[in-house]
Each structure stands twice: as structure tokens, then as C-alpha cells.
Amino acid sequence: MPRSYPPAFRHQALALLTAGRSVSDVAASLGVAESCLYRWRKQDSIDRGQADGASSRESAELTTAKKRIRDLEEEVKILRKAAAAVEKVVPPKVRFRLVAELHADGVRIGRSCHALGVSRSGYYEWASRAPSARSIRHAWLSDLIGTVHQSSRGTYGRPRVHAELLHNHGVVVGHNTVGLLMRRSGLSGLPKRRRGYRIKQVPTSSDLVKRNFHRDGPNQLWVTDITEHPTREGKLYCCVVIDTFSRRVVGWAIDSTQRVELATNALGMAIDNRGDVTGGVIHGDHGVQFTSWTFTQRARHAGLLPSLGSVGDPYDNAVVESFWGRMQTELLNRRRWDTRIELASAMFEYIEGFHNRQRRHSALGWRSPVEFENNALQQSPAPQIAVQSTGS
Image (cartoon, rainbow, N blue to C red; front, side):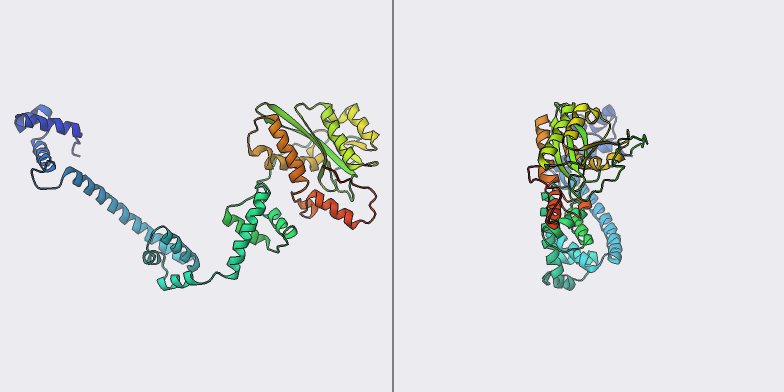
């Protein structure tokens, strides 16, 4: 392979020749062939305009052009093979759309049609055809689905978007159509946070629920638990009380510590919001907050029966564990939180503004907890237990 000399080396060698030294002398001194020096001197004369021929710049451009032509020829061969494969599996309507996209990028229609194996007349007929009723409906649905997805803070997947369209907008559409339009728009719900649990079956005499969370009316069974989440200032703790009848958070408390007061304040809010709760059950785990004398007395004073699941078994409190999983996915883990106040405000807005009043639950027939309770009260002319309309 011929040795390559840098431009600076060639320039200095030509300077020696210009100074009056012979070609043989310079060649022997620098260790290069005399033919190289003659060729360099001739090219230098061409570059200076003293002789006819292609300049160094033109030669470099010609070499680059040849390389580009070779690359394009290879790309054409590859594209012809790909187009032949596409023609076998892709219907003409889809290829017509590809022609339109290529034309928008500056490619001539005739070349695109030839490459994709469709006729120009067929493309022009497709392009001039009025949009079908199905296409118009899909475009309208796509806009509506985008609005629904945005209003859910980007958390809704296909089932909840479908429920929102049906119950809130009165739009009858199939699940598969909603999924198709969401995929085309690049929309998706947040994945459910799944964790593996090790089950420790430790029986306890104070478990009044036995994993049966279904109730036929409000204030019959409440479940409670505490979660924590970090901020740059430190951890923040949140305790909630959920009515299993409607999955509504009826009481909550947020604090920088998880003392007994955290659970007691959440229970107190629930009692104040719901009125007479005599005969109901408040179910928690064996955390010190829920086994404390203060919490137990507050519950019994309101007429509630304290209940505790078995030790180390989250399935004994599955309703509230499910709530924490959704909250982690839909709010807490979506960003980093700087201050406790910032996170506390976000938790409050999620619980009261989104979960209770907006988020559709599959267990409630795709209704929100507030909507589910209101419908239940309307269908029951004389409810045994009244639910106060408060800010919970």
C-alpha cells in the first residue's frame, strides 16, 4: 500500500525544490521516491494555474463523489429488495400513505410509487378521495382520547379511558378501538407497580375481616395504613383511612414523623367526615400506631370495632396496599420531590382531587368513589347510615 505523506511534508519538500535543490538530492535526503516529487511538483503547478489538469480540491471532490455514488448504488439495491418484500405484506392503502409522507419530504411521487410498487394513478385517486366516515370518527375519537388521557395526569390506560368515554362522555366505542387509537397517538397508561410478598401466616384473634373486604354499605368497614416517601429534606409520612364500600379515602393525615398522632388524626378526620359510624370496623396492621391505646380508644369511643390482620401479611390489608401501589405509580415515583411541603400538597391533591372524585375504579364499575357513593344513596330511598357531604 502506497505511503501517505501529510500536506505539510509535501509542502516543505516542494519548498526545497523551489530553493534550487535537485529532485534526486531531495529524494535521497527525505527518503521518498523521485516519482513522488515529480508528481507533487506537477500538481503544485496545476494548483497554481500554471498547468492544465484537475486541481487538488477538484480531485478530492471527485473522490468524495465517487464514494457517495458507490454508497447510493448500494442503498438503492437494498431498498429495491426491501420494497419487494414490503409489496408482498403491506396493503396498497398503507403504501399510498408512505408515498404521501415521502412526497412531503421532497421525494417525487413517481419515484416513490415506482419504489413501493404502486401506480401513480392509484395514488392520485387515493389522495383525491374524501375521508371515510370511519376515518373522521377515528380522528375525533383520537382528540377526545388525548383530552381524557391528559385530564388523568397521563395515568389512564385503555380500560379507564374506555370507561371515561362511556360514563362521562356517553361515547360507545369498543375496547380494541380505544387501544388502537391510543397506540397510534403514542398514549399509554402507567404500569402497575407489582411486588412479591412473603406470606407469614400468623393467626390473630383480633382479625374481624378475614380478607373479606366487600361491604354493602358505607362506614361498615374501614381500612388504614401508613406509607412513607423520601424528599430532599427527608421522609414524609401519610396515613389514610379508606371505606372499602366505595374505595373512598375518608380520612388522611400527613406529617414528617410517624408517631401515634399520625394515625389518630387520620381516624379523627374520617369520624368527623362520616358522622355516626357505630358498629363499623376499623382494620389495620400490627404497627405500633394502630395497636396503641390512643388509637384504640379513639376508635371505640366513636363506636368502631378495632381489627388487626396477621403479622407480616399485606394481603390481610389488600385494599389499602393496592391504594399505595397506585399512588406510588401515579404520583410519588414520577419525579423527585424537593421539599416536604411540595410533596404534602401533591398528596393532598391526589387524594381529594383525583382519587376520590375523578379516578375510575374497576371494582366500582368504572366509577369514581364519590360518584359510586352518590349513586348508591340515590338508589336507596332510606339509607340506614348517612354519609355527610364534606371535603373528604
